[in-house]
Image (cartoon, rainbow, N blue to C red; front, side, top):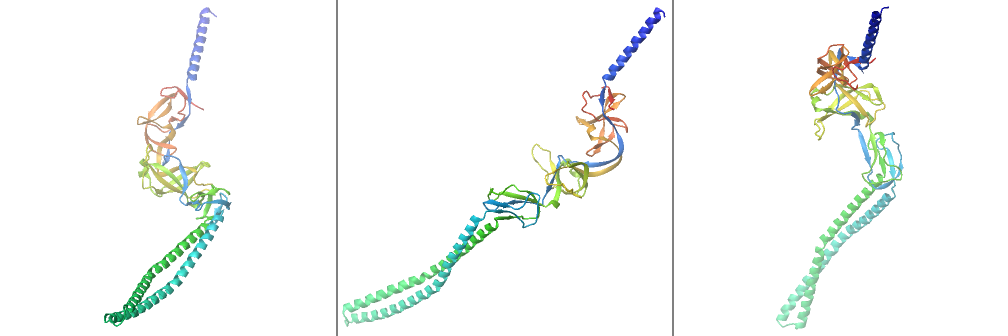
Length: 409
């Protein structure tokens, strides 16, 4: 082989190595991205709440103690099903029983005073009336005698001493009549004393009824039927009036409560279907119906204005409990044969909506006109073609337009 050919071969080998190196370098500088094709098909349009919904109920009762006492016995456990009137716990009733006994004794004493006053009143009326009649008769007799003696004395037929004696008898009879009449005027006071005694009996009867009611409150009973959800007190603890001792919920009244942004209010209507998912079974959707839309809008500061909605499950699952979280999608429309992409692939910046696509080995930015949407997908009205590969891995480092990329296998 001639020297010229050897040099030519060497140059070709070096060139091939350089080309291979450049190719390898370019390949190594490409970022790997995950893509998903823009698809065409039917789309269910939904409204989603501004935050996770909550399982709630209006059929619940917070039971509170009505007297101050120590819990003697708790007769139920959390999770028990009770009927209205069933005992939940018993309180120490010794102090209340003592108050009942005292109130009963006070009532008996007041009743005895009333009975005595009622018996004495007619007797006192008769006595004072007789005394007045007797005093009046004595007064009339003394007055006649005094008048006669006065005439005789003026005619000088009797001595002064006899006249003065008659005058003294007359004055005594008049004083006795005035006293008897004064005693008669005390009868209305005695009648009022009977009324006071009657009022005291009524008051003591009320005290007895209150004491008996409190004795009944020593047994705390379920005001409604349902499931015992909470028992925050235990035997031996001291409770005061107003202390919560149990919470009972009627499990058949459970519903989902959620907050929807006011901008979606015009799209909501009673009776619309919805799909609910729970963290307990995240892969299963439960059918529900929108049955209430709040007439007011929340106006809390630093928060968006929201409307409270309530949804009833068609078949509530057995695991449903008040306070559980629930993801809600209210179905407001169904559209056919539209182009759509996953919702997480669409970005917004300065009122512009766009996606990244993989085009001939490079990242390209595509402005789009987004349409209706649900939790998972967004309709694309303009800017994309069916089948184009939309970038799904938006968290890849270095992702931006014109960057070389390859599809992750």
